[in-house]
Length: 270
Image 1 (cartoon, helix red, strand yellow):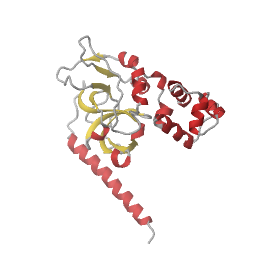
Image 2 (cartoon, rainbow, N blue to C red; image 1 turned 180 degrees about the vertical axis):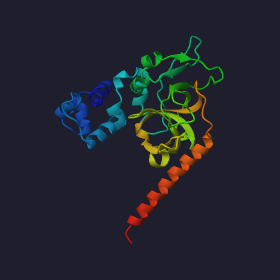
Image 3 (spheres, helix red, strand yellow; image 1 turned 135 degrees about the horizontal axis):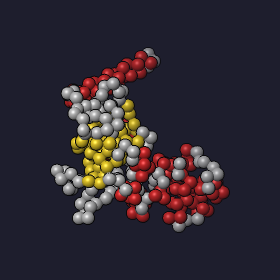
Image 4 (cartoon, rainbow, N blue to C red; image 1 turned 120 degrees about the vertical axis):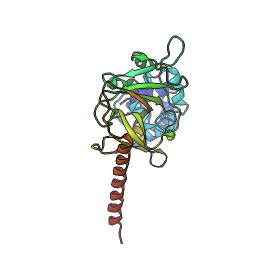
């Protein structure tokens, strides 16, 4: 958790004393000092006060090490473009280019996944990833390739290299399309998505392999989203109809929703 270092950094960037910030938040200066020095942890009401004061989400204050951001990235966050505040905001993306100024496609291998979860913001980390070009992709868009693992998205096989196009506006996510999603807790997942951001603030994630149950994730836990473009594998996919699998998965989740509604209906007082 980076709360202590983050609030200390943000205070110094505002060129404020502890007394000035404490006064604005209506807390005592020693209390603020305790938070900054990890002597004490604030409750939820105080966390919300810090979030409002700095115009930065609680998720960011707790989970993102702001010290690792570049000056440009910090300015963007401080100007209200916090990637965790709402799905439609501008994303901050670390990227690389070749000697001609063309966008590279960085490769996040299975071994690099854990590091990517923490280093996706870090230009140095991104620069250390393998890079390549695919001439048939648009030069106007940003792509990245991720190595997936497991069989939840069969017929796309285990260890396939899945390339995605960077999604700037999360509200534009289309129901039923596949996306690579970087999450706070699960790391990188590759799923069919139902977009419930505008109404419920979440995404429903569905596997092509119907042996896996659909589940939902709050948008506040999402770091990056990439729309599936294509995949590379040294294995031939099985002959399963992908559209059929998507249809079955969607029917499964719809059936579960109906059952939940019935249970809720039975509990209503007469």
